[in-house]
Image (cartoon, rainbow, N blue to C red; front, side, top):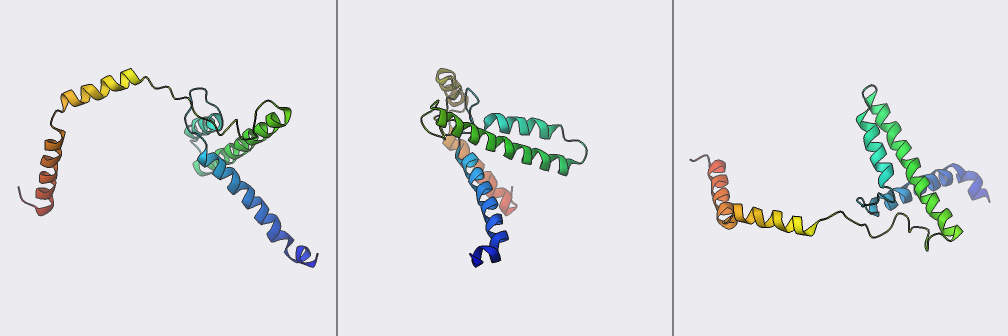
Length: 142
C-alpha cells in the first residue's frame, strides 16, 4: 500500500499513456480504406477536412483536430464494445477490425495495365537507357 502512496502519480500517468498507446495501435492496424467507410475512417476523414480549414493559429488548430480525432476514435472503440455487449456484433473489435470492401473494377484496371504495356513495349531497354544516362550525369560526361 505504501508503494501506491509513494508512486500514485507515476502509476496514473502510466495508465493514461498506455491507454492512448493502445488506441494508437488499434487505429494504426485497422483498415484505412473501405467502400462503406466503416471503423475509424470517418473520424480520419473529418480530421483531414477540418485541418484543411485551419488558417489562423495553425499549430493550435491542428493540435485541436488531432485531439478531437483521438476522442472520435475512442468513441468508435466504445461503440464496438457497446454493440458487442448488446449482441449486435460477434466481437468488441468487429466494427473496426474487418475485411475491407475496396471499390476496384478489375476489368478497368486490367485495361489500364494493358494500355501501359502497349505504349511502353520495351520497359527493360528504357530502364537500361535511364541507368546509362544516370551514370553519365554522375560522372559529368555527356
